[in-house]
Amino acid sequence: MSAPHSTTATPAIEVLSPSKEAWRVFRRNKAAMLGLVLLAVVIFTMLLGPTLYPVPPFDIVAAPFTGPFENAQVPLGTDYLGRDILAGMAVGGRATLLVGLAAAAITVTIGLTIGALAGYFGGWVDEALSRFTEIFQVMPSLLFAMVLMTLFNPSLLTAIIAIGMVTWTSTARLARAEFMRLRKLEYVSAARALGASPIRLMVREILPNAAPPLIVSATLIIGVAILFEAGLSFLGLSDPNVMSWGLMIGSNRKYVLDAWWAVTFPGIAIFLTVLAVSLVGDGLNDALNPKMHQR
Image (cartoon, rainbow, N blue to C red):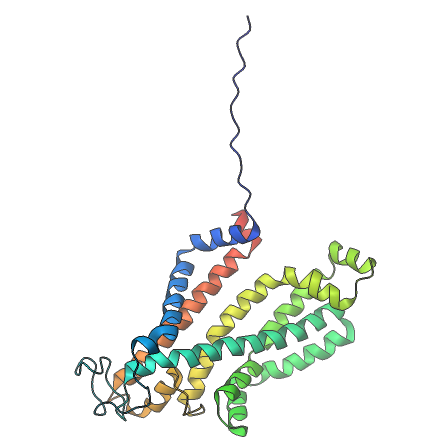
């Protein structure tokens, strides 16, 4: 009698969807998860801070230059006018994050439009749009933003537009490179042969495959926009009627030796927020990069 054949069960290989695979790679990045937690804390503070600590940020609540933990009513102290630092921290994050998100949206819109047209059509369109991009690229970004803020009434909207107008060039160059690379692939040529219009090819065929690096770029631009807003506020080119972390630093910059806490605490908040956004951006870069999945 022949010996019975032994059969070994082959373990099933789990095939994850692209979104689940991206989340798996992102979750394994400890730095990215730390950034996500920090960002969640900032957003939580932005949304619920004014409710949990309902003190108007512009009200004078104690003596000027009250130090941290000297008065229980103002745990983080007061600025040169006697305004509550903690109240400004709780409310100021809203304007700071709003500037970052809105300016990043303008940046991606302008950069993606110009880069997509230049990369897809090539030729004289690419030449003209590339030269137009280079004009903005060689301009001093902060100086150009300062000019825009000076020409128009300083406000939150003006700051958003000014920052968006000076930070779109890198996104345009990235989009141009991606569209120029993807337009030559077979699936785009097949769709073109079937009669798809250029708009459909760019939006339906090329853009979904060019989205991952653009998403990462947009994430990092949020941090750049937050730093830009802080820089403009430090120079006194922000809306004095809207509390933001940058405004807190700018209004107290002359008294940094007398009230270091009035500048340090909002500065730490900006630092942690930009750090969190950068860590999340790096994690997205790994998660949306197919080569990292293969590793």
